[in-house]
Length: 174
Ligand SMILES: CC(C)(COP(=O)(O)OP(=O)(O)OC[C@H]1O[C@@H](n2cnc3c(N)ncnc32)[C@H](O)[C@@H]1OP(=O)(O)O)[C@@H](O)C(=O)NCCC(=O)NCCS
Image 1 (spheres, protein in one colour):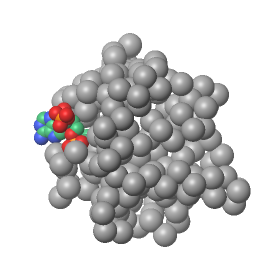
Image 2 (cartoon, rainbow, N blue to C red):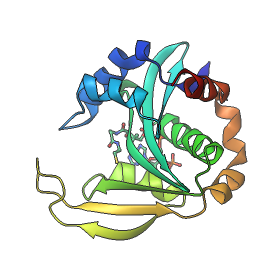
Image 3 (cartoon, helix red, strand yellow):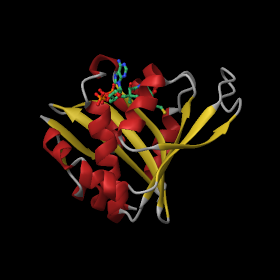
Image 4 (cartoon, rainbow, N blue to C red):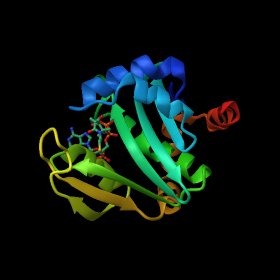
């Protein structure tokens, strides 16, 4: 069963493993822990039979949602989980008051770019040599109406079970 819920401290070892397998310059384990205490941050994990297979982080600042990172375990890629996770992230962002969503993507990361394109993101800017590890530029993408994307992809809801209440519990713990 595919479930999507709020990340907890117990998930961080699994999330960090996926982070190191997915990014040339991964976040540290400590920065992932720090995100649990960050009031504007919300992190989702996607699990298959209770095993964490991916995660997505966001900051909700007023009505804007900024995606910090999204990754799927390499063994589970190209099976639709990244798209489901991004769709669920939009539902959670909407729940916390965001109406738009933005992120940066490496200019060479074609797979991620086609994922975002399929979820109505459009290009609105480019930062030259943004990634210091390779000198690649960052394409800035925006989805200015996540509610519309949520409505138009309603059929995706049947692909996973979303525990929206797990995000409320996190709010109460802070
Ligand atoms: C980007 C990433 C999260 C996508 O997750 P995923 O589960 O593999 O993607 P999905 O199977 O849900 O596919 C979503 C879309 O991505 C594209 N895609 C996925 N795999 C692809 C492949 N092998 N080749 C080309 N496009 C592909 C397709 O457009 C697909 O949409 P479609 O199935 O409707 O055509 C995943 O590849 C990943 O973790 N990459 C490493 C980390 C990363 O680059 N994160 C993004 C940082 S901005």
